[in-house]
Structures are given as C-alpha cells and as structure tokens.
Length: 231
Image 1 (cartoon, helix red, strand yellow):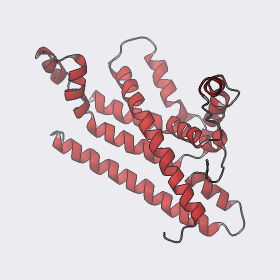
Image 2 (cartoon, rainbow, N blue to C red; image 1 turned 120 degrees about the horizontal axis):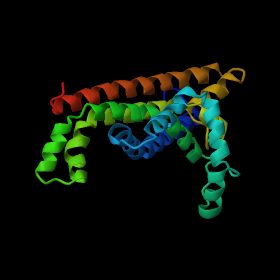
Image 3 (spheres, rainbow, N blue to C red; image 1 turned 45 degrees about the vertical axis):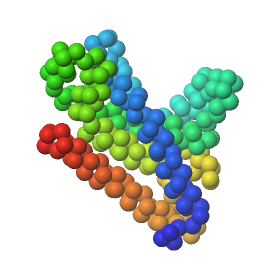
Image 4 (cartoon, one colour; image 1 turned 180 degrees about the horizontal axis):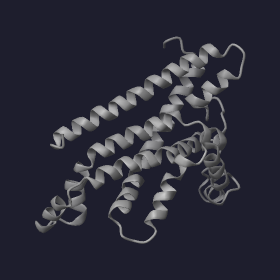
C-alpha cells in the first residue's frame, strides 16, 4: 500500500490500535471528570483541574517516567497489577495505550467541559420537574446537548494519541511489532543511514491521519450542532 513495507504497516496498525483503546478508555472517565469540574462544588476541584491538565505542561518524557515509576514492574500500581492479575503494562502495547491516553485526556476533558458549560440548565430543570430522574435527565437532555464537545474531544484525543512519542517511548520503549508506534518508527528511521525514505512515507501517513481527524472533528461537531439547533 503506497509503497509501505510490512514493518511500516505494522507500526501504523499498532498506532491505530493504541489510539483506539486510549480514546475508548478515556471517554467515560473524561465525562465524569468534566461533570465534576463544571457541576461539583466540592473543595479540591482546582487541584483536580490542575492534575488533569498537567500532562500538557510537563515534558512528555517526564510524564512517561512518572508512568514508569507508577506502572512499571516495580512500581506501586504496576507491581500490584502484575502480582494480583498478571497485567504488565511497561514495555507492552497496553502501556503505550495508557501513555497515549494520559497525554490525550486533557484535550478530551477540555472539549467536553466547554460543551457542558454551554448546556442550558433550565432544560435540565424542566425535565426534572416532569418527573425524570437525574440519570435520565443526563442521558436524554444533557448528553445530547454535549454531543458536539464529545465528538470534538474524542477525535482530538485520538489524534493526540496517534502522534504521542515522548511519554510512550519512555514508558514502553520502541519494540518493533510490540510498542513501536508511528512516531517511534519515524524516529527509528531517522537514526539509520538510508532511512529517510521510510521516515518520509510514515510522516506523510501521520500528517494525513492527523488532518483527517481534525477535519472529521470539525465536520461532525458542526453537523451535531445543526441537528440540535445550536448553529
């Protein structure tokens, strides 16, 4: 396909799998966090907001190292998961998905939070006065009105996960066929003589996927907004 080698196709497929799982795993947590940040009046919300956005400020290598300390075989969480459930994240593709999720999570939360802040609380109150439970109000009123933000956040998180490099390579290294994602494969090509062609091919694929994700995010958000009468 487009002159791509088997090794390059493997890196692309692995990146799609990693980004897909990172996004799917982040979505329910991001909704809960956004709800807490917007609706909760409990103390500590400012701290939670800072922790959520910390990966955007920290160097990705630092984030990856912190993940290694926590989820490595000797880390507090990693040792527990390995001993009790046989789950190993460090130097596995699952660890790459975790690193990608951590890096893309702030973008998803921010998009969902902005969309949630725009929801008219009077509509929720009206549904409540008609006898709907809080859970039913959320599912039938709040969630549909949040849809543009959900779509935008999901696709932006996916695009970020596809392009994540620093945290991933620090936490899971770059093992061909196991943890070598698209960005780490590009980096590997740039380190060997004659690897420019492979790096260029994968760069073109990376740019195409990222641009497609951004355009899809904009189009789907606008379409959802029109259906809801928001634009």
